[in-house]
Image 1 (cartoon, rainbow, N blue to C red):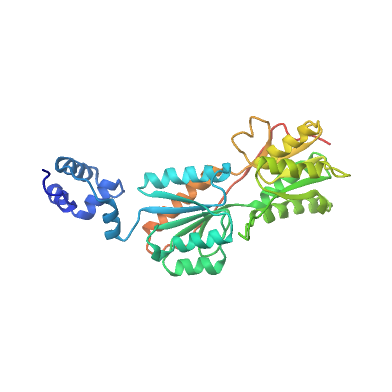
Image 2 (image 1 turned 90 degrees about the horizontal axis):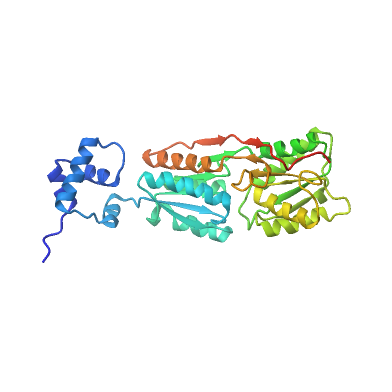
Length: 337
């Protein structure tokens, strides 16, 4: 026969602290003195206390859950950000709830499910899933906490890189090596997600040409996903043109890997017969000698975690916007035409 259920108040009385302090100590949250935390842990162990976490969260009006949305959870870029985000939020006592959001309907449902009144999460992180200013402002007006990664809107805290500069840096390198006909593998934007990264990187590509006194041929731009197979087919379109490019700027390294496969299909040597630049610095890029614009992907996840945790600790946080640096990593995939 079991004895009466031990409650949080019993632990508080045994440790000589408030129930709120017991809750913070057991969850590993900050601002609890080491001696106090140890006293609480000892009392909980001696009383064999097992917290009812759902009830505790309901009573506190929190879920200790952060909801994250990404277009493709399996993609390397997204998975790297989510890994860093989850590591830091879990260490702070929060669960991370991940959703794949591939189109505008799924985005709307995600926002509805994780709104302030839903009781499903305490905060939202949108990774390359853009929302319009009206939606963002309404979310904040209702008391919602959200952070964006990959795009910026005034009402929400954000983590971005300068994607125009990314496109300019990659294209300038190819132009500086003597290339004048440069193909562009653009990222397709999905179903009305207002995905601004492709247009910004394309703007950098265009600015680099303009600064060199050149006008890029529209036929040299092909949109595709970050799938190796689809990028391979798109690169075949560029390389099969009557006037093929001598170089290709791929908007992500995974597209560049597909372009490498297409070059191999055609008997072209990357770095000699075809120059190639990607973006991200994927884990496999150094293995294949890919020149790329590194955007410190894991650091974006860390920055997003810090922003969302800071926002949760502040009653009415002002939006903060962080722009991280990028870096050109020169390897073996670029040469002269």
